[in-house]
Length: 107
Length: 107
Length: 107
Length: 107
Image 1 (tube, rainbow over the protein chains, first blue to last red):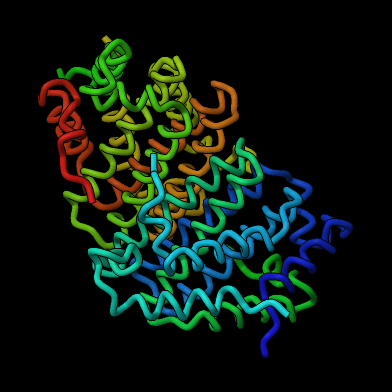
Image 2: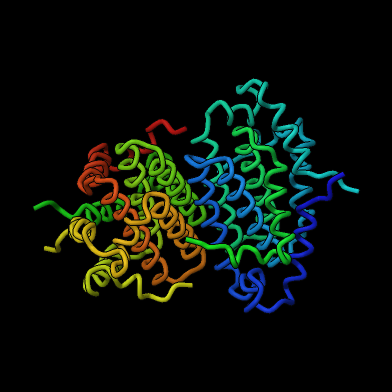
């Protein structure tokens, strides 16, 4: 059975909190703070849109990984457990199979 | 041991391919096609930036789940296995612990 | 000589501050506040990326107008004069013709 | 009467088509092509969201200028006249004062 990649990544990203920003990319993200991490998420989302519109499957895979990776960096930086996101996703699974979102009020 | 939420979601999203767009939110996304799914990813990314900048932990959790959810919808729609993203993330884990990205040439 | 469309729009958007949110789209944006206006900017930016990647010239024109329009709504809502953006753009023009940005330190 | 900054910028950006990418920031954007220009628009939009959520008025001005600047670069690169965007914005002004958008069908 495969290990849960999200949890595994989370643990390593957590360890990077004590790494040297000059040699660790992740530690450098933490050192630059919230705005910088959010800018990276914005960049990676833009790259996923561009890949999704015209790119190869490999580009979509690459950009999705980049986007998830940097979202996890945000969670770790903010001290939010990845299990919270898991629970939120499971909650949707439980509600008549993903259809919760449609009925949820949106702004 | 927890099940892998990404794989579990993927399977259910895959099943929604045969659901009725008028009653299934996910099926309605597939029916509207690539541009619509990408717009949703763009929207959710924007909402994560806004939550990350000033929102509560719950808002960040909620928006991260929304963003991952819609990225998975894109993968399923494009026929890309979630394991490809897992492998891409694992590849980074293998390369001296997440530091691959820093050495990867960026535009 | 054409009137300055940015200033003209700004004035009308300013007048909408006293309009009824139930009958004026712009007034409804103001009523929903900063987060909602920013979400609209995020959406329109995503739509411009999608149009820019694969859309027609008309779609690019339409989405650029949408993006500028909603950025102006933000300026008006925040009480920022459009002339400030004009001055910022003119400042770049003055610095050896737009090349300021390259030399500006970036995060 | 102030000159129209959008048209003025457009002309200079147009002239940059023949500049050397190694010394002109704008020429380097053209040389890198559509995807790169769109990534910059995505980045600047993300930075505007972040500034709009928590930044100073100066940051909002700066990021709005960056976003408009890079949207204009896209127009020039795609051979789309800035007057087309002006006309699109004027068309909305003409339709009972900006309220066109609310009545326009949205996906």
